[in-house]
Image 1: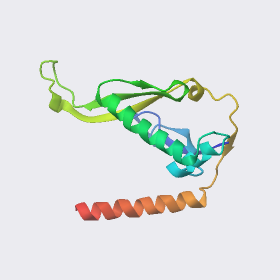
Image 2 (image 1 turned 180 degrees about the horizontal axis):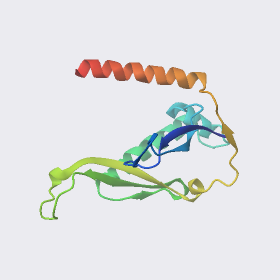
Image 3 (image 1 turned 135 degrees about the horizontal axis):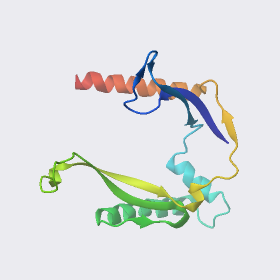
Image 4 (image 1 turned 120 degrees about the horizontal axis):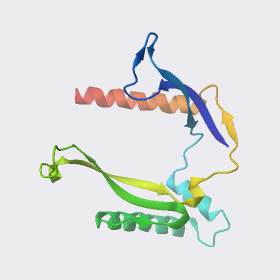
Length: 156
């Protein structure tokens, strides 16, 4: 089941102001119930009648991460079938002309994932509207906010 919450957001960045303020719309956002860490995920795979232990699964996935990274740094994309494809995208400062564009215009290299077929369509989703925040989510938000404030005070 996928939980969702509703929030009020801007229709588009740069939306024209109305008399009441900016034009807004009600939007839905997925709510994470829990986070499975790497060890727990490897155990979950091992528990699915896999002939491979948690340790073997963990080793294969760890090696896969290194190999995907190596291939991306070599300029390749990596397709993993139904899991999807990993590729590199660049965040750049624009230049007026192609002649003006230099490598220094590239500010970030980001890894992107394009979902495979099994991740593109979920025909049997059960939806559950969350009207109040789950207690552990509020705790996570408070911890994140405290860490953010601590980091700001260290920089300032």
